[in-house]
Image 1 (spheres, rainbow, N blue to C red):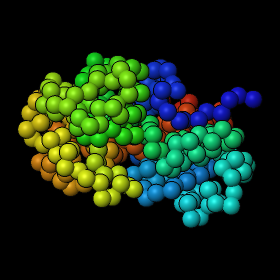
Image 2: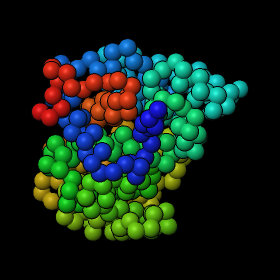
Image 3: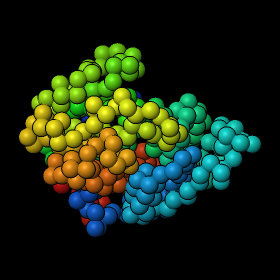
Length: 305
């Protein structure tokens, strides 16, 4: 029996595998209005312990467009973390469905679910990482700039799960990654990662400008005064390359981490980025389910296109 193909963190993969998944994502996007029915008869379970718009919609539509089914449960609807252990939940769900997507706060709990699941488990987001988002972001970079190799990606604001996945992807996709953040957060940055407290320095010559909300779910009431020098606004974008693009995983806190004229401006590709969650996740699902008999070689669909 082959090992189960989980999608946990980008650091777990080699570059060729991730680039191959993105190649399939581009091909699936090209077939947006004629999606191949490669998941016929398969079911994806989706588990959430917090609100979700993009993660839920993109995975649910991805599975259904490709012919599969979904079951959605929030923390009030499942026994996980309640009367039932994570191990037992993983064992039972593995008998019912073909794959599991989990968006949960505790990364260690997520890893425990992966340990006992007998079907692929996909990291829809934890407090430690957000690999599916970065796959969609890099797909967007490839669409707009050709590829990520050799590009400078500059991050502004807080250190969080999204920036962690950007860090993991950098050596695999060959881009330079630099973080601009308040001085008192310097100690949060992992060893070996370039960072500065000067936002203009980070933006200088950047090909991609990225930010995220300063106040994530569960951080309500957080003091944001120290982050204002790192707002992505027109002045900051002026230090980047003239053809630089702006990314934000959404939702935005309007207009805190990014100004309205940038978010709605010509360099913003945030809604292309959001759509690409759908197509990147189709390809991630296809990779995870390949050993379940999913075929992507039918005549009506050509991944090499």
